[in-house]
Image (cartoon, rainbow, N blue to C red):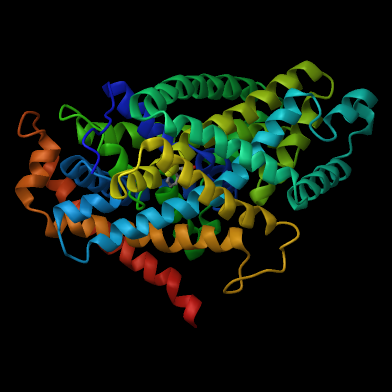
Length: 470
Ligand code: PHE
């Protein structure tokens, strides 16, 4: 085992790094899409329930495991329950870390491409519209153009892979530098930038003509849209968005100091993450409604609908359109990067500690493995469209394995581990920093960890898996 472990240097670093892991494509890309499908505010309410009753207890459990063991996701279980099968939770987590980084980086690579395109003022079609003036803007026509451009790009064998590789390299460079000089330093730089951009974009989008329509959509609960599928989706989204269930937060919290307040930090991360998700809705819906496009545009929302919306709404003011589009994609890129770093760290910490390798070497191994797996995922949108395993292309397969299987199962095991297996005293010591800070909500928190979260996850998990075997 490497004698010297890194640690976060400040409480702000702890919060920004953990919030950086949480705030990602999940908030800005997936959340608004799910809100669009799931009945606006009705979905948001259900989502909030899952965040605070189920995902937050899993986060706290991960914090307790990580900080008491001070080890990577697998090592932590080896230390706290030697020779016991609980280690399965750690193994699934590290495996999930490799898979999630591989498919996530593909979408992050697309984001990088769109960022560069918008910086060059060449977001497909935008330039054309600006050149030709507003009269050529026809809703249907433009959407098709953007959709074609997007499909052509993602199915190209090379371009998305090059973007994926560049993105992976950026992630690698941060992780290889270590905890304080890498992860903490860059989180402290990128997270404030991200928050400023969000506020700017919300400001922009609220002043758009027709913005009120979008806000009404976001805030009006449409109960008819809430199907069982939507409820299941809300839990998946809550887990993915808070990065729980894979041991990512076990790993991060193994670098927390003994002064770090676990409950307060978890609450802060949940609040920041939810605020960013909802604010992204405030960026996207008013803009989308201002040009009268259907909000439930599906996953193409940020790569097809939004470029179209940018072009349509800012055709008369190209410079504003340019700024809005560029800021938006930079935001997405920053969010993706702070999350991918944390996925990478799950694997790097494990390899470096378990196989006693230097951080640089461990990080390089992870980068190469995930790059290869990432290429598989990327190709599944193009030349390997027909290649399927269990009826799914690689991207879908990895996504499915992580979000529908490893995350809920990992979350279940971790809450059971902390709620029922670990010594109650040890758990309370962790939550209260050895009795130095009173936690008035201790009883309800333990109730959530012992009963509500595991039971809720189990019900939903079985519900999701059941149809697969019918
Ligand atoms: N929470 C991140 C997001 O919302 C994704 C993530 C999942 C990060 C798992 C780390 C681990 O995009």
